[in-house]
Length: 473
Image (tube, rainbow, N blue to C red; front, side):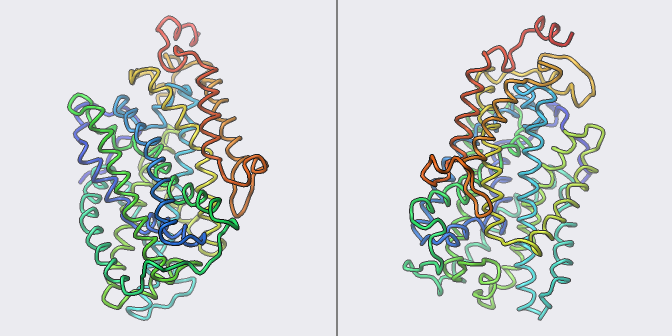
């Protein structure tokens, strides 16, 4: 299979051969991994029991899918990735906001997937063959996982799609076996051995809904276009693509997350997940667990690295996608080492997802408002102005930036950061929200409202040709 050469340029109609079933396969197969499963552990680590954990994860996921899934329709129309597509609303240079947000999201989730996958690999190998569990062993395993992930990401979309289709079947079987493996240690009365993280039930439940539930779909706000740009709007309707995206996200996220909640309670993993998961595993499930840790991690992190390569390619047009992917693979691996040797898992994960949710939500809301306003009508050539190092076009706005859209995002993100509550940082607006983290709601409302008020319809991607010429001049 040849290495994909296409970066964030417009995908020709002849190459847009994927369909809704491929969307479901890639969203399901890539998410059935420990990097997503571990989010089901978060509610338990916060002190929530079975049903509180399940309801918070399900509620957060459904809300997140409702906001995120429509973004898949943007790249269906533009035939390029979402950060580049957002240039229709932020400007062809202003779309760097989306590229940076996407880069940070993918970087964090790639590191998390390699981190938890590597830890489970070391633990299972220690039980199977007596492998030492020191820092050197972890370093080697992390490096091997990162190398395999980088190869998959460099080869590109077609290989990742085939891998996801295979993982959708293999990982489903492995997780089903896992339910049997841990059933003996689980009862519906199982409760975590940790107190409520925020002191009482409802604030902790809401934190879980955001950090464990909503964060899953939000991770895809810049990724969905990587797949739908290969779907032809001439052969597949927007409704079928939207339905496939919703199905893929809901099933692909809830199945592994709820498996994580089940196994965290069964293994009594309130303070740590990887160690108790391996320790509680029966001997017959160690090999399947090892396969899940390796194959699942490569599939999920491979897609994240692929997206990171596209985002870096969008930021640095002179870089090829393959070279950009190798660079971000090295950076992600460095974050894995930092996470293992210098950070607490729960605090790092919670802080990361809450902060990036606050930053990413207003960008997603603004992009959706712009998409609705322009009726899904774009000028694909004008979106590529920055990539071709030229000027002008209907999305040039002011020196390539849409100041009001960018300011709306920045203010929304700032409000979100000021309202966030993490183990490492608490925003000053928490005093006004009763200590409850409403960061994603406030950031989305403020950013979206400002954009809607400050920008008339014609400034959201429907500028006429004479106006575009005047702006370019």
